[in-house]
Image 1 (cartoon, one colour):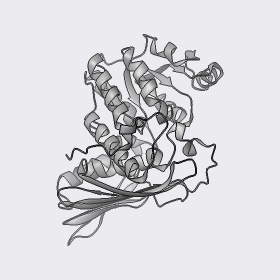
Image 2 (cartoon, one colour):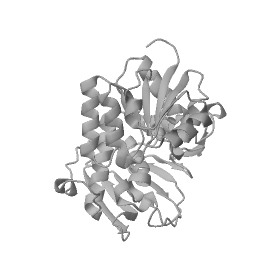
Image 3 (cartoon, helix red, strand yellow):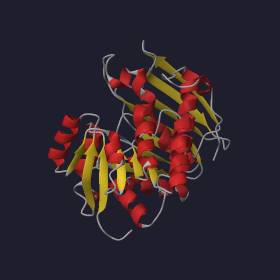
Length: 344
């Protein structure tokens, strides 16, 4: 692809779509050319807000728009399989929000579709593209704290959310795990790969979704990860990585940090801070820039957010749901059993 503006289509018009589009329009080499919603009025309002030329009142019209280089899918995760699949079937490249799908089976179907079409596909795990998280991972990979022994991460919101809210709705993949828990799980697997075993407990709502979940992930190396998510209590949203020779602490907002502290055994602590030139800590520009870099390079997936890693996270989320007894409408009975984990 020539060094020219990458033309984006936006599928859905909710809060995350607005946040992403606001960051996207600030990139000099990005152009938002179309938006789609199930409501024409919603699409029109979104298009007017961001100066987008074409607004569609149905997803298929966007999928059939040939003047788009990549589609950003920002629906609730219960609709990711349908929305991203529609765009991939039409031959589009796709950036799909997280959690990537409801379950690993749906994720595998999207990956197979992308491979069959030769299209680019990436989960919008913006944490993996964050410059400070990339620095943290590089330090761990380089042995700055020795062999990783334990990872801790939490993400909880105080709520309370009423039963009608999407976070309490099984039909929309509600619960803490897929909406929030995907971050602690993805953080642990960024550093350790796919676990060999999963233990989990949860508090379930009357609707059958998880209000809070705690999981212990284990690896054949002996490493452990303690992850927690909640929609009934605000947590510190912190993370730590403990190794045989030190520790890294991310004191708050671990998935979009402004700083972290490296403690090496026998040395003074070292603080790493975000570069102001990288923009606000909650900026989604880095994942957008990575998509455009990959498209120009002719890549069908990103090395920062590889599809194998996305599938591995989905298998872990499936395993956690199996342990705590959460199943969503329309899932086949076999998806209620624990999937086979494939340790990295």
